[in-house]
Image (cartoon, rainbow over all chains, first blue to last red; front, side, top):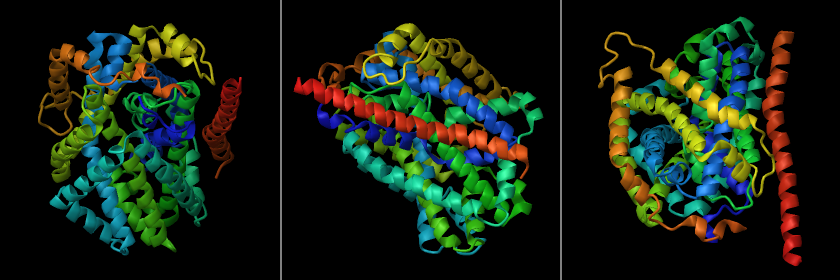
Length: 487
Length: 44
């Protein structure tokens, strides 16, 4: 690996990885889920699962990338043996399946950013009109292609391009969210939002739903178990630490979620407290693209804050999309393709396979459901591959090995070996427990059958191709042998 | 806002934001130590 294939510094790596972790889920999902699950009690469970799911899995991902210096397929082969190539393939497929529709979301954010800049969201109802005339139409296809093109333009230049983009976008995103949060808490009536978010209802902690929602939120918005951290860890310098970086990304991601929660809920309660349950219950898209512009429009100086909000959302989405594009690109590079060929193939596939989600909301929702739940399986596969390598060996040789800043104890072995697999199985059962009428239907938008059918096709293909995957995942340059990451 | 809500806010925000800032400062210090050790090694 040449020097240009390595992050220039620890800060460059951390900022890029934070950009991967902080996405739309922090801004549009966390406030809604926290508000509808007991506020303060949910936050307690959410902080606990940062330690019981996200950080242990992030340590696994960082250590796989640092040790194997290959994408998800090659890393699973290097760490778990050739028989596990299909698991690495599933992790990649899951993240790439998300990339196909995440570019659609990024496109929506860019469209609303443009509308907020040009004054197209000036009156209360214009956001609803824009959303209804835009989502699921050919216009959405155009912004989807634009989002992919922006991502391809960054990944084209390799890790240095990713680092340069993150160095601009992430500090700007943090400043914008902080400005929005400060503005929100200084609005008259904002303390009702803070009270709603932070007042705990301890009796709710007896409900399994709170804990499972908190675990799900951690699984979806920290990026743990997606394979994205592994992909960025390939470009770490050899002296780089694993565990401290994992804690930093986990805490950094959740810090942004908390800021976003305060910003959104204080705005809702200060501007339109009567409609708070309707706003919180409007779903991710309804909250973000219909309600938030209406709230900003009713706020003094709201047009400026609306631009900041959609710019923050666009930056968060774009930096996560870049990571997903890089994940798929890295796998092709490992198979012997050149970077520029690889990113063009990935970008082309993104445009083609994301188009149905851009044109039809039901397909978008179906893909979000199928591959969102698939992330639980990805997390389980990471834990199984780490167990196959030997958790104690991984802890000793990689996590606490060269460059370690924060040695981890045997607690981590227990967590990854036992707790994470149990959590993954419980989450899978919980999300797929709804066996109502028609549960088996493979073409329904939200059925259990559609999840199982799409996973089954993916897993059968990957298992049939396992030997080929294992062989091709090491056809490219052997990054571990070239010493470029040694500084 | 009730006292319990204030305490919960202080604990949650203190843990998450305080944890992030403390870890960042610690990582910054560790990076400085590593760099000086590397420079020392190069001089030797």
